[in-house]
Image (cartoon, protein in one colour):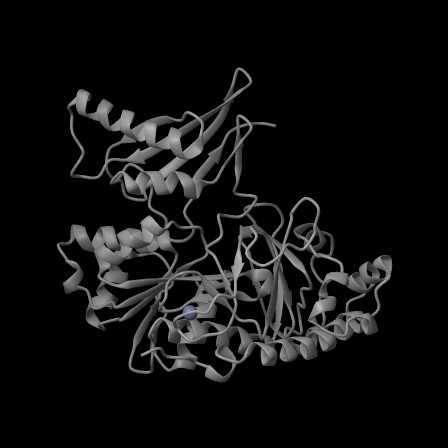
Length: 433
Ligand SMILES: [Zn+2]
């Protein structure tokens, strides 16, 4: 039986959703016009006034916000509420440039935690469950977001945060945890550790996992599900918009429902900024229509994906987004060809490797080189050079046919790549351009 946290919204008729969006959007545009001079200036430059926005159909009249705006307006330039009304900040790791610092009022935290509660409930969670939150706590949104959602659902929450893998396993076992929340790469590591300790899928109390904050392939999902004996659900979000829970997966496990009563999604052509029709692939853009302190309007996520309003078997009417191909900033251009790390991961897992790999890109004599370094599984590990070469050749052919370019393959001994407790470092780009 499908469970919902806020059924009246999650399954609302389309007209009702649209009218909620219209009402909130009008209010939000007035709010930023009145309180965010940075965005008001952008509106003025585009010749748009709040009264020009009469429905969701007018969204396209509004200017975009990008990562650059966040940098330029850092730290307070996009704040929509006086600091005395704000109760918390969260922040990104800042691996790709300046940190994003996002502000929250209590209202913003409540709606964020509601979104996470919807995700946990869609994964089958109830107040009978024991939910272990192994995302990092602190500035990172993963831990606090799922922690709050888990409280709202009424699960017994185990706030282990990330790291200390054997202690994670001890808590899962001793307290019979049923739901695990962490990054997919950390779930894969926990799965590997369980296996090493001799646990089969039926010996592990977990029944579901909610994994996000990095790109992961369907093959990796299948692997984690099999090893842990769980259903693995995807969750999507970003700090700029609150954190995890902007979109979440349901029992159909085919794309994530966007919480449209809080976020309006559009797909645009990243080069022309033109809005594309439903079903087209392009850059995902979000307008947060409910957030007070950090009210992002038409924020360009740089994630490449598709939207679909096809009827979902779970009964939810919220539009679905496909798993993003990866951030457009994750996309590598190698010898002029677009390569997503997720494509490489698909080939590796299809060939029987686990998701323990690194992609090293370099430039030698003005030519890009691509080196895919992957660990052999303990089963395929051997001293026999002929056998290793055979594995290498097979993988190299698989990569060539997926990517259209040749890649060097380096097979490594099991356990030679450092395991990640948060977001895995998959790409090392040594090119100086
Ligand atoms: Zn669904």
